[in-house]
Image (tube, rainbow, N blue to C red; front, side, top):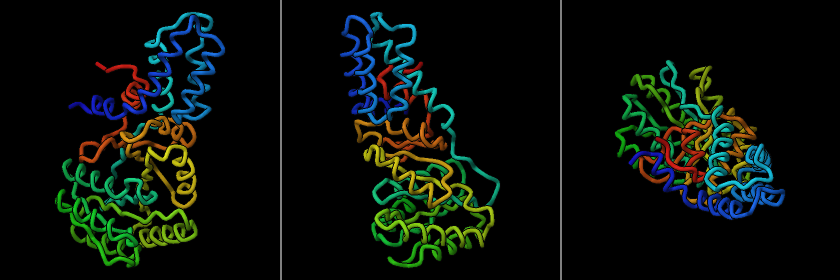
Length: 306
């Protein structure tokens, strides 16, 4: 199945909310102030954020105010505006000549961070890269075990220690082993405990200090994994991690589990960070590079692409 069709199917919760609201607006005799306000409210409820809601509603109203407008045209106009916002941030995960390339992965517990690492590792291995994973979330036995399962599945070595071990030490051991083995990419998992931001900041800073002793230019990527189902909380999570880590790009998971997939648009508008990939399920190929036009069409119900 093409990923767009899968994306469209999995975003049903979000697109149904928008499509249903748009259908109701299109039933009005003309596009008037009340209809525009209704459209703004609809987009805000879908977590696109007030700035995007105003911008998209204005785009729909331009040249059409006081006229009858079909639902499909509204969806098409919304999709076009959403794609325009997302286009500048849709960027593939950059790969560098540095060996090993160090990818630090951050995010709160439960965001899908560990499975994202496993999926990316499997995909990179499938693309011909040698990959190693460092199980740096040493506070959770489940995180270590999950990475070990993914490592076995993908044929990727996982460097892990006991629960409670020093995360920076795990990272350094992995980097040394990767250098000795000539490994292309090292992905480092980290703990995400937002309830104590001081501890989180201290641990991330220590991991980065240790990584930079190994390679002053590392980490080459710092990926923030966000869970779409938390809605507006994703904004506050991004705020925290932008202050505690030099985030270079985003991965959004669990878009299939929310009626508010518009949070991705709000994140793009607010932070302007590259969005490298989105996740819509549990399988390896359910994590894919981010295509803004596909996403905009799937979110708004604007239809398939040729």
